[in-house]
Length: 158
Image (tube, rainbow, N blue to C red):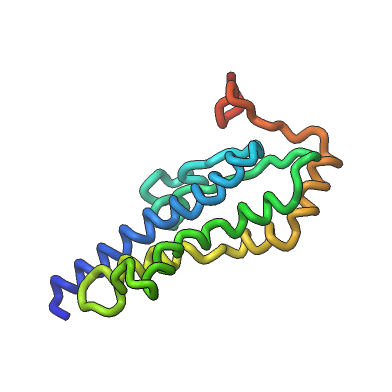
């Protein structure tokens, strides 16, 4: 690879990971929204040092579900594993519907590799998978948990 191709591969990988991180969190939120489970999406959490510093640390978005006592634990589990659906288009490669990005030379394979890395569940996702019932129980025991409504902004003001 030439230096220009290496630079292009690095840029493609960085862009794919950036977009993939947001898609990962939005995959969680899609399940929660479809099931009408209250949740909050924090854009650039921990942005004490500014948006650029938060973005460089990889903290682009975070989804915080607010399950109620009637929320089934399986919904939280499905939401936790939903980012695996990001690799669904690659399931069409063996059928010949989509070209294999790893069979050719070029930067597309680096972009696909970054996207696939974002489809992996995080340690927090696995924690929700195994302990979703505890999260639901803790909200039943803690009646002081504030559930944001459509009229409430993320900072709690109306």
